[in-house]
Image 1 (cartoon, rainbow, N blue to C red):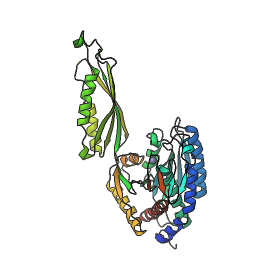
Image 2: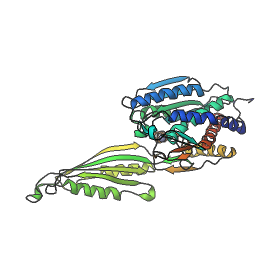
Image 3: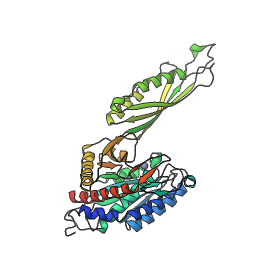
Image 4: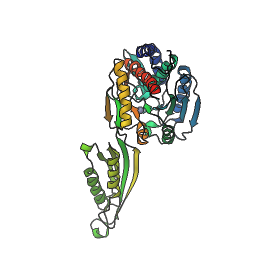
Length: 395
Ligand SMILES: [Zn+2]
Protein backbone atom coordinates (compact mmCIF):
# COMPACT_ATOMS: atom_id res chain seq x y z
CA UNK A 1 0.00 0.00 0.00
CA UNK A 2 1.55 3.27 -1.08
CA UNK A 3 -1.33 5.67 -0.49
CA UNK A 4 -3.27 4.74 2.61
CA UNK A 5 -6.50 6.00 1.17
CA UNK A 6 -6.26 3.98 -2.01
CA UNK A 7 -8.31 0.84 -1.97
CA UNK A 8 -6.21 -2.23 -1.15
CA UNK A 9 -5.95 -5.02 -3.66
CA UNK A 10 -9.07 -7.09 -3.05
CA UNK A 11 -7.31 -10.36 -3.77
CA UNK A 12 -4.64 -9.52 -1.19
CA UNK A 13 -7.38 -8.69 1.31
CA UNK A 14 -9.19 -11.94 0.50
CA UNK A 15 -6.03 -13.99 0.91
CA UNK A 16 -5.32 -12.35 4.23
CA UNK A 17 -8.80 -13.08 5.58
CA UNK A 18 -8.63 -16.65 4.24
CA UNK A 19 -5.41 -17.06 6.24
CA UNK A 20 -7.46 -16.36 9.35
CA UNK A 21 -9.89 -19.19 8.66
CA UNK A 22 -8.71 -21.65 11.31
CA UNK A 23 -8.48 -18.92 13.91
CA UNK A 24 -12.01 -17.77 13.09
CA UNK A 25 -13.35 -21.29 13.56
CA UNK A 26 -11.46 -21.71 16.85
CA UNK A 27 -12.76 -18.32 18.04
CA UNK A 28 -16.35 -19.25 17.17
CA UNK A 29 -16.04 -22.60 18.96
CA UNK A 30 -14.69 -20.85 22.07
CA UNK A 31 -17.32 -18.11 21.98
CA UNK A 32 -20.26 -20.46 21.41
CA UNK A 33 -18.83 -22.64 24.18
CA UNK A 34 -19.89 -19.90 26.60
CA UNK A 35 -23.65 -19.88 27.18
CA UNK A 36 -25.19 -16.42 27.06
CA UNK A 37 -28.96 -16.74 27.47
CA UNK A 38 -30.78 -13.39 27.50
CA UNK A 39 -32.30 -14.15 30.92
CA UNK A 40 -29.13 -15.05 32.85
CA UNK A 41 -27.26 -11.93 33.96
CA UNK A 42 -24.39 -13.93 35.49
CA UNK A 43 -23.69 -15.92 32.34
CA UNK A 44 -24.05 -12.78 30.21
CA UNK A 45 -21.45 -10.99 32.35
CA UNK A 46 -19.04 -13.89 32.00
CA UNK A 47 -19.64 -13.99 28.25
CA UNK A 48 -19.17 -10.25 27.82
CA UNK A 49 -15.91 -10.31 29.77
CA UNK A 50 -14.67 -13.04 27.46
CA UNK A 51 -15.79 -11.14 24.35
CA UNK A 52 -13.96 -7.96 25.38
CA UNK A 53 -10.78 -9.81 26.22
CA UNK A 54 -10.95 -11.75 22.95
CA UNK A 55 -11.57 -8.56 20.96
CA UNK A 56 -8.46 -7.14 22.59
CA UNK A 57 -6.48 -10.09 21.23
CA UNK A 58 -7.93 -9.92 17.71
CA UNK A 59 -8.49 -6.21 17.11
CA UNK A 60 -6.44 -4.54 19.84
CA UNK A 61 -7.50 -2.16 22.58
CA UNK A 62 -10.43 0.16 21.83
CA UNK A 63 -9.76 3.90 21.78
CA UNK A 64 -12.83 4.45 23.94
CA UNK A 65 -15.06 2.21 26.03
CA UNK A 66 -18.34 2.80 27.86
CA UNK A 67 -20.40 0.34 29.88
CA UNK A 68 -24.14 0.81 30.30
CA UNK A 69 -25.61 -1.08 33.24
CA UNK A 70 -28.33 -3.40 31.97
CA UNK A 71 -29.94 -3.79 35.39
CA UNK A 72 -32.01 -6.97 35.15
CA UNK A 73 -30.56 -7.57 31.68
CA UNK A 74 -27.06 -7.97 30.29
CA UNK A 75 -24.86 -4.87 30.20
CA UNK A 76 -24.35 -3.01 26.93
CA UNK A 77 -20.78 -2.05 26.02
CA UNK A 78 -19.86 0.58 23.43
CA UNK A 79 -16.35 0.31 22.03
CA UNK A 80 -14.68 2.71 19.66
CA UNK A 81 -11.87 1.75 17.35
CA UNK A 82 -10.60 4.92 15.77
CA UNK A 83 -8.70 4.47 12.55
CA UNK A 84 -5.01 5.21 12.68
CA UNK A 85 -4.04 4.83 9.01
CA UNK A 86 -3.25 8.14 7.34
CA UNK A 87 -5.88 9.42 4.96
CA UNK A 88 -6.15 12.45 2.72
CA UNK A 89 -9.46 13.46 4.24
CA UNK A 90 -11.51 13.03 7.39
CA UNK A 91 -12.61 9.46 7.89
CA UNK A 92 -16.27 8.60 8.38
CA UNK A 93 -17.71 6.56 11.23
CA UNK A 94 -19.61 3.34 10.99
CA UNK A 95 -21.71 1.82 13.74
CA UNK A 96 -21.72 -1.95 14.15
CA UNK A 97 -24.43 -3.67 16.20
CA UNK A 98 -23.76 -7.10 17.69
CA UNK A 99 -25.80 -8.84 20.34
CA UNK A 100 -23.99 -11.39 22.48
CA UNK A 101 -27.09 -13.03 23.96
CA UNK A 102 -28.79 -16.10 22.51
CA UNK A 103 -32.23 -17.66 22.85
CA UNK A 104 -30.70 -20.80 24.36
CA UNK A 105 -31.17 -21.47 28.08
CA UNK A 106 -28.38 -22.36 30.48
CA UNK A 107 -27.49 -26.04 30.18
CA UNK A 108 -28.24 -26.32 26.46
CA UNK A 109 -24.59 -27.14 25.71
CA UNK A 110 -24.82 -30.35 27.77
CA UNK A 111 -27.03 -31.97 25.17
CA UNK A 112 -25.85 -29.92 22.21
CA UNK A 113 -22.12 -29.16 22.28
CA UNK A 114 -20.39 -26.98 19.70
CA UNK A 115 -19.13 -29.22 16.89
CA UNK A 116 -17.17 -28.53 13.71
CA UNK A 117 -18.13 -30.98 10.98
CA UNK A 118 -16.59 -30.21 7.60
CA UNK A 119 -17.87 -26.82 6.51
CA UNK A 120 -20.44 -26.64 9.31
CA UNK A 121 -20.16 -25.36 12.85
CA UNK A 122 -23.19 -26.32 14.93
CA UNK A 123 -24.05 -25.22 18.44
CA UNK A 124 -26.31 -22.83 20.30
CA UNK A 125 -25.99 -19.28 18.98
CA UNK A 126 -23.37 -19.96 16.30
CA UNK A 127 -25.62 -18.66 13.51
CA UNK A 128 -27.52 -16.05 15.53
CA UNK A 129 -25.16 -14.29 15.87
CA UNK A 130 -21.86 -15.39 17.35
CA UNK A 131 -20.23 -16.12 13.99
CA UNK A 132 -21.20 -12.60 12.89
CA UNK A 133 -19.12 -10.94 15.62
CA UNK A 134 -16.17 -13.27 14.93
CA UNK A 135 -16.35 -12.44 11.21
CA UNK A 136 -16.55 -8.72 11.85
CA UNK A 137 -13.64 -8.68 14.31
CA UNK A 138 -11.40 -10.50 11.85
CA UNK A 139 -12.48 -8.23 9.00
CA UNK A 140 -11.48 -5.20 11.05
CA UNK A 141 -8.20 -6.84 12.09
CA UNK A 142 -7.42 -7.78 8.48
CA UNK A 143 -7.88 -4.21 7.25
CA UNK A 144 -5.65 -2.91 10.03
CA UNK A 145 -3.03 -5.60 9.44
CA UNK A 146 -2.76 -4.48 5.79
CA UNK A 147 -2.52 -0.84 6.84
CA UNK A 148 -5.52 0.09 4.71
CA UNK A 149 -7.66 3.14 5.45
CA UNK A 150 -10.96 2.34 7.13
CA UNK A 151 -13.70 4.28 8.89
CA UNK A 152 -13.68 4.81 12.62
CA UNK A 153 -15.72 2.00 14.13
CA UNK A 154 -18.25 2.24 16.92
CA UNK A 155 -19.14 -1.27 18.09
CA UNK A 156 -22.16 -1.80 20.35
CA UNK A 157 -22.40 -5.14 22.18
CA UNK A 158 -25.77 -5.82 23.81
CA UNK A 159 -27.11 -8.78 25.74
CA UNK A 160 -30.87 -8.27 25.48
CA UNK A 161 -31.59 -8.29 21.74
CA UNK A 162 -33.47 -11.57 21.79
CA UNK A 163 -35.98 -10.14 24.25
CA UNK A 164 -36.50 -6.89 22.33
CA UNK A 165 -33.50 -4.83 23.55
CA UNK A 166 -35.36 -3.19 26.45
CA UNK A 167 -32.23 -1.87 28.18
CA UNK A 168 -29.95 -1.39 25.16
CA UNK A 169 -32.29 0.39 22.77
CA UNK A 170 -31.35 3.88 24.00
CA UNK A 171 -27.63 3.09 23.82
CA UNK A 172 -28.03 1.77 20.28
CA UNK A 173 -30.02 4.81 19.19
CA UNK A 174 -27.47 7.20 20.73
CA UNK A 175 -24.65 5.41 18.91
CA UNK A 176 -26.50 5.44 15.59
CA UNK A 177 -27.45 9.13 15.92
CA UNK A 178 -23.77 10.05 16.06
CA UNK A 179 -23.63 9.35 12.35
CA UNK A 180 -22.56 7.06 9.57
CA UNK A 181 -23.90 3.87 8.07
CA UNK A 182 -24.80 0.91 10.25
CA UNK A 183 -23.64 -2.67 9.82
CA UNK A 184 -25.48 -5.47 11.60
CA UNK A 185 -23.61 -8.81 11.37
CA UNK A 186 -26.79 -10.75 12.08
CA UNK A 187 -27.15 -14.04 10.24
CA UNK A 188 -28.02 -13.98 6.54
CA UNK A 189 -31.36 -15.31 5.28
CA UNK A 190 -30.64 -18.09 2.80
CA UNK A 191 -27.31 -16.36 2.14
CA UNK A 192 -29.00 -13.00 1.52
CA UNK A 193 -28.43 -9.79 3.45
CA UNK A 194 -31.51 -8.09 4.85
CA UNK A 195 -32.29 -4.66 3.45
CA UNK A 196 -35.84 -4.56 4.82
CA UNK A 197 -37.40 -5.97 7.92
CA UNK A 198 -40.94 -5.82 9.12
CA UNK A 199 -41.87 -3.76 12.13
CA UNK A 200 -43.37 -5.75 14.97
CA UNK A 201 -46.16 -4.55 17.26
CA UNK A 202 -47.28 -6.48 20.32
CA UNK A 203 -50.61 -5.31 21.69
CA UNK A 204 -53.16 -6.37 24.30
CA UNK A 205 -56.82 -5.45 23.98
CA UNK A 206 -58.89 -5.80 27.14
CA UNK A 207 -62.67 -5.72 27.30
CA UNK A 208 -64.44 -4.91 30.56
CA UNK A 209 -68.09 -5.97 30.80
CA UNK A 210 -70.60 -6.14 33.64
CA UNK A 211 -71.14 -9.54 35.25
CA UNK A 212 -74.72 -10.63 35.85
CA UNK A 213 -76.59 -13.92 35.87
CA UNK A 214 -76.85 -14.99 32.26
CA UNK A 215 -80.44 -16.18 32.64
CA UNK A 216 -82.05 -14.05 35.32
CA UNK A 217 -81.18 -10.54 34.18
CA UNK A 218 -79.08 -10.52 31.00
CA UNK A 219 -80.05 -6.96 30.03
CA UNK A 220 -78.45 -5.56 33.17
CA UNK A 221 -75.03 -6.89 32.20
CA UNK A 222 -72.53 -6.49 29.38
CA UNK A 223 -70.50 -9.33 27.93
CA UNK A 224 -66.77 -8.91 27.60
CA UNK A 225 -66.76 -12.04 25.42
CA UNK A 226 -69.11 -10.37 22.95
CA UNK A 227 -66.91 -7.28 22.91
CA UNK A 228 -63.64 -9.14 22.41
CA UNK A 229 -65.18 -11.29 19.66
CA UNK A 230 -66.08 -8.12 17.74
CA UNK A 231 -62.57 -6.77 18.33
CA UNK A 232 -60.97 -9.94 16.96
CA UNK A 233 -63.01 -9.67 13.76
CA UNK A 234 -62.16 -5.98 13.34
CA UNK A 235 -58.45 -6.59 13.91
CA UNK A 236 -58.23 -9.53 11.55
CA UNK A 237 -60.09 -7.49 8.94
CA UNK A 238 -57.39 -4.82 9.30
CA UNK A 239 -54.71 -7.18 7.96
CA UNK A 240 -53.53 -6.47 4.43
CA UNK A 241 -51.36 -9.39 3.40
CA UNK A 242 -50.75 -7.93 -0.06
CA UNK A 243 -49.25 -4.86 1.62
CA UNK A 244 -47.24 -7.12 3.94
CA UNK A 245 -49.36 -6.39 7.00
CA UNK A 246 -50.34 -9.32 9.17
CA UNK A 247 -52.53 -9.02 12.26
CA UNK A 248 -52.87 -12.08 14.45
CA UNK A 249 -54.91 -12.41 17.63
CA UNK A 250 -53.07 -15.46 18.83
CA UNK A 251 -54.45 -15.72 22.36
CA UNK A 252 -57.82 -14.89 23.90
CA UNK A 253 -58.71 -15.26 27.55
CA UNK A 254 -62.28 -14.51 28.57
CA UNK A 255 -65.00 -15.15 31.11
CA UNK A 256 -65.42 -17.32 34.16
CA UNK A 257 -68.64 -19.40 33.88
CA UNK A 258 -71.07 -20.16 31.10
CA UNK A 259 -73.95 -18.80 33.24
CA UNK A 260 -72.27 -15.45 33.88
CA UNK A 261 -72.14 -12.60 31.38
CA UNK A 262 -68.35 -12.23 31.11
CA UNK A 263 -66.80 -9.36 33.04
CA UNK A 264 -63.36 -9.49 31.49
CA UNK A 265 -61.66 -10.60 28.30
CA UNK A 266 -58.18 -10.12 26.88
CA UNK A 267 -56.77 -10.60 23.37
CA UNK A 268 -53.02 -10.73 22.58
CA UNK A 269 -52.18 -9.37 19.15
CA UNK A 270 -49.04 -9.68 17.00
CA UNK A 271 -48.84 -7.15 14.14
CA UNK A 272 -46.18 -7.08 11.40
CA UNK A 273 -45.89 -4.27 8.87
CA UNK A 274 -43.55 -3.34 6.02
CA UNK A 275 -44.03 0.43 6.02
CA UNK A 276 -44.37 3.28 8.48
CA UNK A 277 -47.65 4.17 6.74
CA UNK A 278 -49.03 0.75 7.57
CA UNK A 279 -47.95 0.95 11.20
CA UNK A 280 -49.73 4.32 11.42
CA UNK A 281 -52.84 2.79 9.86
CA UNK A 282 -52.83 -0.03 12.42
CA UNK A 283 -52.34 2.52 15.21
CA UNK A 284 -55.47 4.20 13.89
CA UNK A 285 -57.42 0.94 13.88
CA UNK A 286 -56.43 0.23 17.48
CA UNK A 287 -57.21 3.77 18.62
CA UNK A 288 -60.59 3.56 16.89
CA UNK A 289 -61.78 0.43 18.72
CA UNK A 290 -65.00 1.16 20.61
CA UNK A 291 -67.14 -1.00 22.85
CA UNK A 292 -70.37 -2.12 21.21
CA UNK A 293 -72.38 -2.12 24.45
CA UNK A 294 -72.53 1.23 26.25
CA UNK A 295 -72.04 -0.61 29.57
CA UNK A 296 -68.73 -2.12 28.39
CA UNK A 297 -65.38 -0.53 27.72
CA UNK A 298 -62.14 -1.42 25.95
CA UNK A 299 -58.50 -0.71 26.79
CA UNK A 300 -55.51 -1.11 24.47
CA UNK A 301 -51.94 -1.49 25.75
CA UNK A 302 -48.59 -2.49 24.30
CA UNK A 303 -46.90 -0.95 21.31
CA UNK A 304 -44.35 -1.31 18.56
CA UNK A 305 -41.50 -3.44 19.82
CA UNK A 306 -39.38 -2.56 16.82
CA UNK A 307 -40.20 -0.03 14.13
CA UNK A 308 -40.31 -1.11 10.51
CA UNK A 309 -37.00 -1.17 8.62
CA UNK A 310 -37.83 0.17 5.17
CA UNK A 311 -35.48 -0.23 2.24
CA UNK A 312 -34.50 3.42 2.01
CA UNK A 313 -32.39 4.77 -0.84
CA UNK A 314 -29.47 5.12 1.60
CA UNK A 315 -29.78 1.45 2.54
CA UNK A 316 -30.14 0.38 -1.10
CA UNK A 317 -27.01 2.34 -2.01
CA UNK A 318 -25.00 0.78 0.83
CA UNK A 319 -26.21 -2.63 -0.29
CA UNK A 320 -25.20 -1.97 -3.90
CA UNK A 321 -21.70 -1.00 -2.76
CA UNK A 322 -21.35 -4.22 -0.76
CA UNK A 323 -22.82 -6.37 -3.53
CA UNK A 324 -20.49 -4.98 -6.16
CA UNK A 325 -17.45 -5.57 -3.92
CA UNK A 326 -18.66 -9.12 -3.28
CA UNK A 327 -19.02 -9.61 -7.01
CA UNK A 328 -15.45 -8.41 -7.58
CA UNK A 329 -14.33 -10.93 -4.97
CA UNK A 330 -16.14 -13.68 -6.86
CA UNK A 331 -19.10 -13.98 -4.46
CA UNK A 332 -22.75 -13.21 -4.78
CA UNK A 333 -24.48 -11.11 -2.15
CA UNK A 334 -28.22 -11.26 -2.72
CA UNK A 335 -30.64 -9.16 -0.68
CA UNK A 336 -34.02 -9.96 0.79
CA UNK A 337 -36.69 -8.62 3.12
CA UNK A 338 -37.74 -10.61 6.17
CA UNK A 339 -40.56 -10.69 8.71
CA UNK A 340 -38.31 -10.89 11.77
CA UNK A 341 -36.96 -7.75 13.43
CA UNK A 342 -33.52 -6.88 14.80
CA UNK A 343 -31.70 -3.90 16.28
CA UNK A 344 -31.21 -2.83 12.66
CA UNK A 345 -34.85 -1.72 12.77
CA UNK A 346 -33.99 0.95 15.38
CA UNK A 347 -31.15 2.26 13.21
CA UNK A 348 -33.26 2.36 10.04
CA UNK A 349 -36.07 4.19 11.82
CA UNK A 350 -33.55 6.97 12.59
CA UNK A 351 -32.96 7.38 8.85
CA UNK A 352 -29.57 5.68 8.59
CA UNK A 353 -28.31 3.33 5.90
CA UNK A 354 -28.39 -0.17 7.38
CA UNK A 355 -26.81 -3.34 6.05
CA UNK A 356 -28.29 -6.12 8.17
CA UNK A 357 -27.67 -9.85 7.88
CA UNK A 358 -24.04 -9.33 6.87
CA UNK A 359 -23.01 -12.05 9.33
CA UNK A 360 -23.13 -15.84 9.22
CA UNK A 361 -24.15 -17.90 6.23
CA UNK A 362 -25.97 -21.01 7.42
CA UNK A 363 -29.43 -21.73 8.76
CA UNK A 364 -31.62 -22.50 11.73
CA UNK A 365 -31.82 -19.30 13.80
CA UNK A 366 -33.58 -20.14 17.08
CA UNK A 367 -33.75 -23.80 15.99
CA UNK A 368 -31.99 -26.95 17.15
CA UNK A 369 -30.28 -27.40 13.80
CA UNK A 370 -28.59 -23.99 13.92
CA UNK A 371 -25.33 -24.00 11.96
CA UNK A 372 -22.84 -21.58 10.41
CA UNK A 373 -20.76 -22.23 7.30
CA UNK A 374 -16.96 -22.02 7.69
CA UNK A 375 -16.43 -21.00 4.06
CA UNK A 376 -19.25 -18.49 4.54
CA UNK A 377 -17.38 -17.00 7.51
CA UNK A 378 -14.33 -16.38 5.35
CA UNK A 379 -16.39 -15.08 2.43
CA UNK A 380 -18.53 -12.64 4.38
CA UNK A 381 -15.64 -11.49 6.55
CA UNK A 382 -13.80 -10.62 3.35
CA UNK A 383 -16.80 -8.72 2.00
CA UNK A 384 -17.05 -6.72 5.24
CA UNK A 385 -13.31 -5.97 5.16
CA UNK A 386 -13.63 -4.76 1.56
CA UNK A 387 -16.68 -2.69 2.49
CA UNK A 388 -14.79 -1.01 5.34
CA UNK A 389 -12.00 0.05 2.99
CA UNK A 390 -14.52 1.27 0.42
CA UNK A 391 -16.42 3.33 3.00
CA UNK A 392 -13.14 4.99 3.99
CA UNK A 393 -12.51 5.81 0.34
CA UNK A 394 -15.96 7.29 -0.12
CA UNK A 395 -15.39 9.42 2.98
ZN1 LIG B 1 -29.79 -12.18 16.25
